[in-house]
Length: 288
Image (cartoon, rainbow, N blue to C red; front, side, top):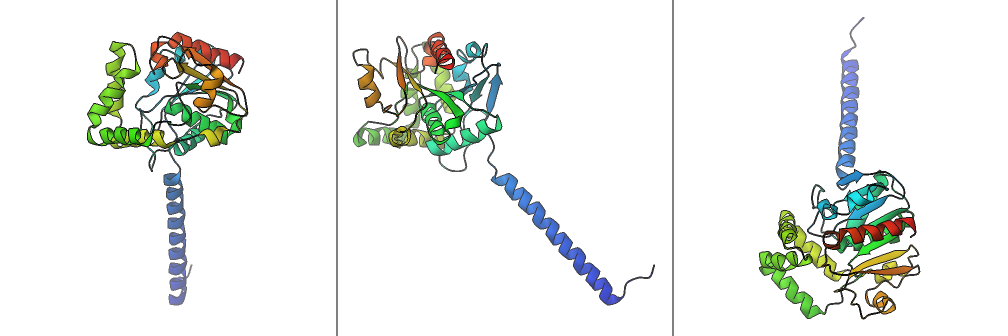
């Protein structure tokens, strides 16, 4: 076979160079798409049965917060324990944490696990996340269980400023004051503080600041999915009616909202009263 002429060889080299450049662009585009696609949140899956129950812990915790509740639910249901960004095995977000951003990460994760018409359960900040996701994606939620959470922070600006100052200037003191007090069990208190200390300090501080400025009342006002608030006596005093508490805590939605008061428990109901909490979630799953 005769060799191509000099001009022909130049044309061949130019063609190969163009193909190489095109291949490089394809590789770069694929790499950029992969890099841009956020990593799903860490999930532990257990049990079988419908509806699926999704459990989302609060800031400073991890999936272990549900260790006394999840196995009970998993005897009848598919249970997904989801870890917040930057907690446990979940990667942090690329930007500062906000309820919307975390809910968006949760939504991507639930879509990947093909979750629809589930019971979304969130504790404290986790409750804000599942409420946000349910408001934006109604098909995900058959019902919502908010555990010891308000939908906004009613504290005055001076009080928030003082808390933020302690958080900024005396971070270890802040954590030691907040996390052990979340349980009535002294043996559990140390583990709560240890978990919180495993979260990056800057990230955890941003989570707290976001929780103080969030107000989901306008967002969830039109929600029709049933919402069940499981509250301690500290959040919902025994002398207050549910009608009053529903308005005060920001659960005046277009759909049904039911209050469940749990006695003899601090903020970590899942640890202090796991049987009571599991029974409430089970009843919501059976009849939202």
